Amino acid sequence: MKAKDLALIVCAFMPIAAFGADREWRFKVFLDNKEIGVHSFALEDQGAERRIEIAADFEYKLLFLTLFEYSHRNTEIWSGDCLQAIEATTVSNGESSEFTAKRTSNAFLPIAADSDAELPSCVMSFAYWNPSFLDQERLLDPQTGQLLDVAVSQPKPDRLLVKGAPVSARHYRLEGDGLGISLWYSEDNEWLGLEVDAVGGRTLRYELL
Image (cartoon, rainbow, N blue to C red; front, side, top):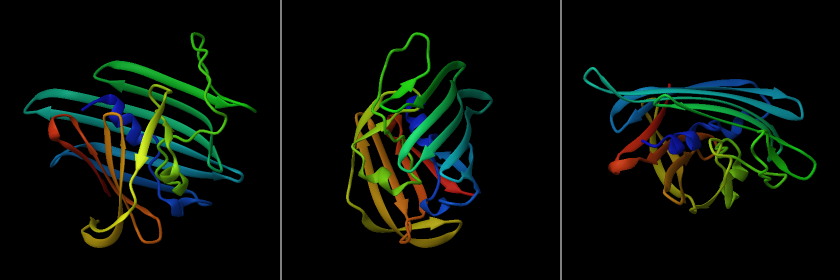
C-alpha cells in the first residue's frame, strides 16, 4: 500500500448531509478481508465555514511481524466549495511528511520556507462530502500539495451492504494517474462506501461502524 494513495482517501471523508451540523463518524478499514485500522473524523459547523478534523491509524501485520504502519492527521477549513486552509501530517513506516497551505485573495499558497509553489485561489481536495467534488477535473493531494488530474464516471445503480443491511446506491468511479477509487452514495447523496485499488491487485475498503 502506498502512503500517497492513503492520504488521498483520508483527506475528507464525510456525507453531503453533514452540511450545517456537527457530526462524527468512525470507519473500520480493511486491506482485502483483513482489518488494519480505524478512520475517524469530526465536522464542526462554524457559520460561514466548516472545520474538518480527520485521523487515521493503520497497521498491517503478518503473524508477529509489522509490514506496514500509517498515521495521518488532517485539519481542513472550507468556505463553500473552496478550501481555505489545510494542515496535514503523515507518518508512513516511520517517514514523516507535512503539508500546510492557506488561501489568499488570488492564490492557495503552501506555508513552507523552501516552497514558492502557487495554486489557484479556489481548490478542492478529495472532499467526498461535497457533491461538487464529483465535477472537478483537478484535485489537491494533501500529502504532496500537488494538483492531480482526475476523471469521474457517470453513476451506475448498485446495491451496497451498509451496517449489515443492503442499501440502494449510486456507484461512481474516480480515476487518475495510478489511482482508482470506487465511491457509493445513497439516493439522497449521503456517502456510503469507498474502495481503492491497492498494489498487487489488492483492495482497501472502508466500512461504517
